[in-house]
Length: 360
Image (cartoon, rainbow, N blue to C red; front, side, top):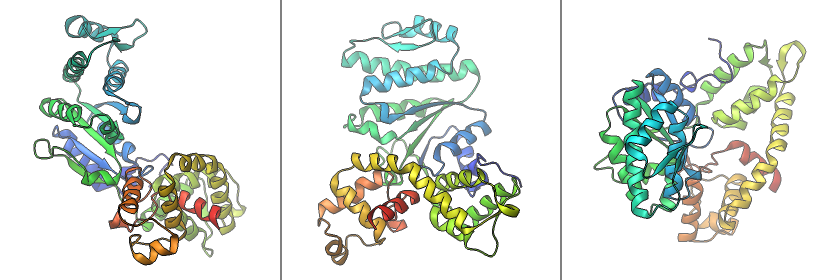
């Protein structure tokens, strides 16, 4: 089996999850895919949509700062996937009170609409998804990345409930919500619109080892058999496919005597990557509240499955009670740590290594 670094994730220890996603989408179902950043959530869904012959529309909900912006992002996604003549016809027949279609191919929401008009525009635009699917004779799958972010302004879940209700009745449209693992226990309206949840856990070491060996074999490279090179690689990535890909790409840029990658070479690749990521990680910490940064640093330096214990709190000077629980929940929702089931370990292994070096 020859694999590229961009090998679809259903070939990297995700075959069961991949097959289930294909089955649900083929049966007009909807999904919640949870995992940490870099676990392959979007890649897995995109490959599954190809398998069922669906067209993909994608929205990053972090950019949806309010209902108006959410509508505009959906309109842009439609513009990118539907023929201009069809969009213009749809505007003329259904949406001319709320939308205008520009010659350069952009469907725009009219400005200065009141709340009632925005709501009408939202429902009409959702209806266009079914029309688009039928017109193109293709299933449409709407991927909503970081979907829980809309709840910062949709506090009563009206927009979410309407969205899920509408898509639920459309026979040619499915949606996939992409979220962190913490979202698994925070779904709304599951009685009326149940969602199947597929959680992407860290990959097993033997799976990642096989994948890494196959990738390197395509360039006549391999880990030095009598060294700790492979183990050092596995320890660094902790089952995280995104970090594994980053290290492998870096290893592939160097030349090695006899094609053997030594322990030193792996260490140098990791160190170089951490240096490159340093600014990104610094910026990430600046965006976090001080109590979450403190907890993140504590878990990186001193991993534990019981951060709420009296001993751990005292050892690291953490806040007790609700403040600590709030920090744990906040870091889980941001995809920076796993939940209790995975022992609260840091979800981004290279971030953990960087923090350890920074604090040591």
